Image 1 (cartoon, rainbow, N blue to C red):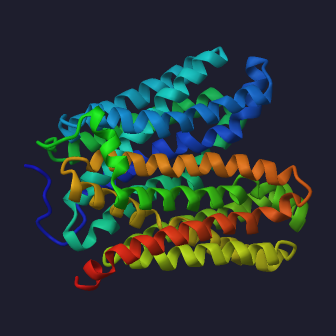
Image 2: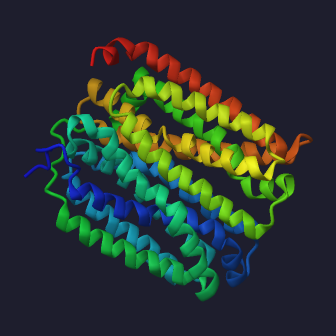
Image 3: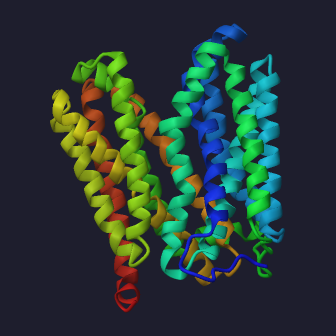
Length: 399
């Protein structure tokens, strides 16, 4: 059994990938809320703990594509289960860590498994789903990542603040172990592609103009997103005047928008994803510019943030689908690498956006400039999406 679709239904195995994605997403984002507790427990500075965020992103951005390329000929089910086992091991190291060095090693390991997991999960979901529901299947996988920001991160932060930060990692270990069992039981055997690319073929994928255009759109879109998103809490507190307690509920509204955007984006990207991407990026940029205009209005900004979360993440399925499709068209067997590169592009954008947002926040325009500066980056992403659409409009128009 190879997991090929035989009906219009989404197989349960794809939902099991969502279950796994929830654990991985929680691991990525929950650390931000745990940094003060970790710094106090290990008697180190907050700035030192900040390296734990950076190293995770580097593990995703660079380790993910490299290890995906190295394992390209391995059966996909086997490599996914192995990846989850390494993920659990990485979090186990964090649970027993009593030095910052061990935590740093843990973050590199788990960051790398993040990139590898989504690299293969996207390809498997696309292959198992009916042709006309591939984007929906990809969105379902990433829904686990999105839902982790709404449920997993607040829950993990609560556990860490009440029972100690190590208990958060223990909870992730338990969830990850359960996810690995569910995936092992539900996912049919997945054979590796006979034409899988090797590590030294990675530059070929990057030099594919069609792939490169989509990756650049991805990077600029999430650079713009994280210029604001990284500093959203201080913006809401200092510019809009919300209390810290109220901000938690507003972030929940944002998270709901993110989850809805991912699901709806997957549904509408099943057909003509290049065309859909143009409109999604345009609305994404517009919401950022609107936020810059309503930044002091408590009633309007909540609605604006719901829309921002929706449009900022509704393009994820289309970006993943197009990257894999364009890479496979030119280099059969490169889908896993291409998918991992797409995840890397997202994280590179997030890292760049966080850095640029910090520069903006510390400059004379200050926090109030973060939305419209973020919007400028998304406009650049929109330009890349127009370029991509112009290259593919004839093909998509004939579908």
